[in-house]
Amino acid sequence: MTRIDRRKLLTTGAFAAAFAGAGMPVGARPKRGGLLRAGVSGGTATDWDARRPWGLAMAVCGAGAVFDTLTEVAPDGSLRGELATRWEALDGATRWALELRRDAMFHNGKPLEATDVIASLALHGPGTAGWAVMRRVASMQPRGRHALDVTLHAPDADFPYLLSDYHLVIYPGDDITGAMAQGIGTGLYRTERLAEGRLEARRVRDHDRGETAGWFDEIEIRALDGHAAQQALANRQVDVIDGEAEARAVSSRIVTGQPYPGVPEQVSLPPFADYVVSAHERLALPRVMGNLWPLDNARLAERWWMA
Image (cartoon, rainbow, N blue to C red):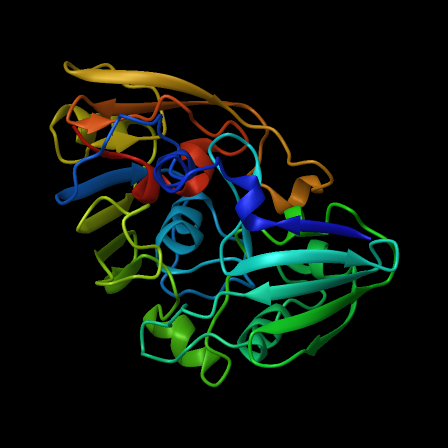
């Protein structure tokens, strides 16, 4: 039997854990407030249906801001809980016992429960974007309001990593259609407006993550590619883009894309290549950056802050 506790994945000490979990060295205290404007490549959509393939733009807007997954990969590459607080492998990793956050709330005021998780994961049948992960699942059963058991067809020690796939976001189970249309999740940011190619969102007050993430009061994410993104950055219409840019007061960093352990290629943001992240100096970059997916695992709104 293998038991993995979320708390053991973070550094010890409350202060250190808060900042290490956000991808920052202790002592590099960020500033709260402000507006993050990001130009992100990879296409766009007009709803939050995660059964469809999401490009980078929708991954950043969705799993990176408005919605949560059960687990996530931290900036240092370690696995930690997001909506799941603990996971335990049973029967040789054929069965997984998951425990959920008891303080997580959807943006419509509904508390998160195990039935929401099961309904959300069950959406991903054959032909959907999340089927590469969910085809491993034989059954799911709630174990009270805040716990569930997942039985797999075969042992899989990497299953908790697979649950961090950005397609496996969690919706309120009683109105998934409405949640997809309106952007109702448990994430740090509540959708104010979603039009084709643009998301405007505001930080949820008193979110269960407290003061450990989400340094911007507002975020604005636009789907921009190539020259349009470079021009927007040069003209200070956006603060950061995922692409090389030549502009004054801009710093760039190469982020190497590579798969998670055990994650099939079709689950990740293709291709596994080097991405260049460029940002104005007004945006502070953590010293520790995720190197598994571009833009710090699609969670720049949580882990970057205004200088």
